Image (cartoon, rainbow, N blue to C red; front, side, top):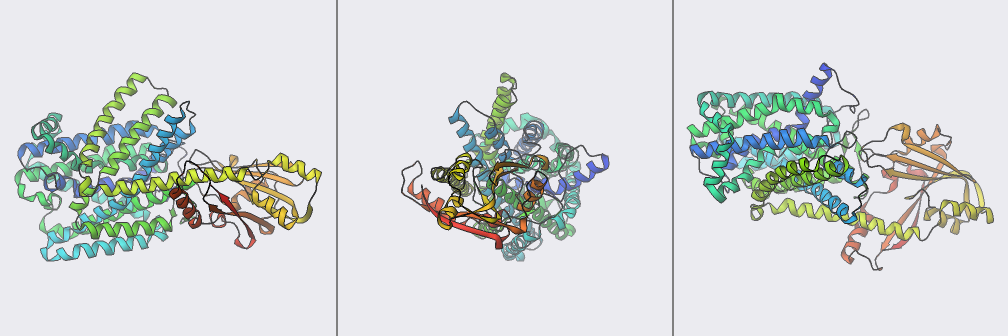
Length: 637
């Protein structure tokens, strides 16, 4: 599933909470982190026996599938993610981009190997966009399909109701999750309690199903069913598709609340429900078309459909806000053009809204619902992106453990080989669905990766061209001593991509207007390879002489820069510019293709298109629009 860097309205964790705080934190984490993996029982077992590659419902097959599912949850979620992967935090933050940032920040001798690792990390993050489109669609659709269980006449209402729910969900995004975040945990708690009770009732009736905890039932299932048994792994994997969120939300809730909530509540509830569905199928094989709702007594179907739909909406909310945060991180790391990012909470970080990502997700998700028409068909497209991301996370973790932490090579080789074989098996089984819709998230991932890499490379080429047109700060100050331009009273700020180089906009202003303000500050916003930079280290002020200042503002890739905050912090370091009286000069580059480079012509045109559609620095840095002067120039790449 897509990463969800956006938690409920919580302060960043800086220490260990007490028992009361831990309980409260765990409750909120329950709603935000476990929504996706918690709603997998709606479709995971069904797809094993009723999907495109569904296996026949028999005694041995039911035990085999349950055994594979049980050990998938134990090995992938409990062991791989909660025990090992969550150790790889970047200043407390998790997620595949944070893992990639660890590698970027580590100086590697082999440049090509470093490039490969960063590239696959970006591709893994790109795949999560495709997953972020499919997850809300399959989750909400699978819940609403309960309507046709209540009454077959409701079958024609399933798609319209799903579209209405998803549309409403996306239209509410601009309010942020803060207002409803407090309700997430309790609702998901009720959800887990209900599905656990429903499963337990069936297990009590048919306790034989508990034999599936022994791994040999899973091995025998794979051996006896050959290729079809292997393909069923693609459906088994649906039970662990929310595992990536546990790692992604680590910085918001901490390792302890996530681990405790999983071990003490979520995992037991999921296992009880899965084993309950298995027990039901032993007694009633004909219920394989929807074993989850078959657990529910007839009088409870309507409340269960309502609860399921609510739970899937919450799970979808976590996915949507996760895409928002993923987009913000990509922008901060320099892999995506500036987009409008709105903070929906004044008191807590992480509550953001990205309009472009929201509307793009809405159109894609609703199109998927209408195009595929059922959760079973969507399930065929689901899984390959997640398995690929998990495979990439395993590879990245290997290099972090080996090269940064210096773990014992033999131990890390054995452990990673074990996890790699598991991930590769699930990826292979999911890849068999390529012709059934699994191509979609891969195409989306490839498209997003192309955008990310094109922007990064195009930006690098453009800055190289601009560098050849300007002077260093030292050279500029020396030139002022030789020929002083007319100085006018006032304060001016020029944004620069390199704090040691004079921005071209300043030189153009001098060349054409023949003036220079009495006080000039060169502002450089630097995105650090850490999620957040404390205020004490956020701003650096250097007095260069002759009224020239350099101001370097350092932000983490999880933060949004603010000009007002920079002025406030810089004031304590001898920078006495007044925000309301300062003029801000920006350069506006027009990209012209022509020079030979590693970028093809179509990618240069793509970069130029992205440049035109990026929001200006005025909006991104929250500059006072009435005080901004833009100076245009052509740049050839």
